[in-house]
Image 1 (cartoon, rainbow, N blue to C red):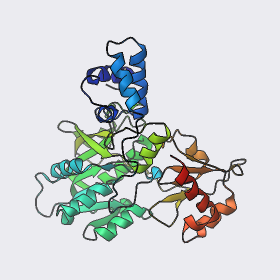
Image 2 (tube, rainbow, N blue to C red):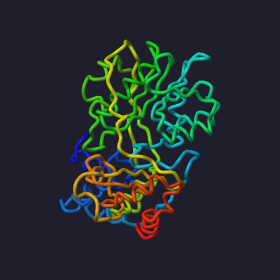
Image 3 (cartoon, rainbow, N blue to C red):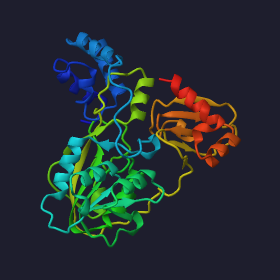
Image 4 (cartoon, rainbow, N blue to C red):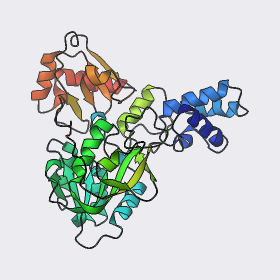
Length: 369
């Protein structure tokens, strides 16, 4: 099940069993909600016996019934460029139970790219068992440190001595980023350690994570052997994604629509070592909350000078805004064409929202969807 036709077949089964689009969106195995709407429209025009019901569900997607602000945790609000999706509470419970199963006292659990699970573990009394793989420039991890100082924090490049007995890693769903991260994380495990590797669900189309999907034998090159059945997990939709959906006219999407798959492995040997591309980034995070903002000084000819402020309809790396944006906020507001002087002022400011450009961004966010 991994194509648009598979989605249409899946929808046919669900048409008569769900109340509205919000409920439908939770049962579509990670399919992007606008893609689900398009599939419903396809059923409507195909003369399907339930085409009327498909039309009703597509129309219900545009009813703005889901709150546009979502409850926040102690961690900083998710930012689109973090690639940070956080597990639902129920998923946190199940993952922590699986990780801890069979461990002896004193054995360690390593968590990478899973700040919400690390925070949940402290609340459940597992703090002394948790090691968090860190990057020095990650403000989410820095906040986690302040709330959970009892956790052990180890830089991703210095994990060799950890010798953890279990790992959960939820990397960005792009193989070129994910696989080097997995390689680094595995260096912190003993042989025979349990590995839980998160990746996209079966209807997350146009995936750039075929290795994470298990569609090739790449994980064996990293020293992993598959074990047990896959498990479906559920994420909380971040505010930036709800705003993205709203900008597309979809307001009745469940805040728990996104699902993924956890594949279980054992570390059987020391596998191939990959170099991570992550350190090179031209974005810098500005000070100030609750809205987080990333800025960069765009230097390409002709890219600056016609300032525009919009809500991004996508955070995919294929989105042209990924290369043309010079400011991106956690509210998914994107600025292109800003003057270099304005961007430099924001970088040097103690509060970016008080700068001339920052005030225009705040004003725009009050009027945008």
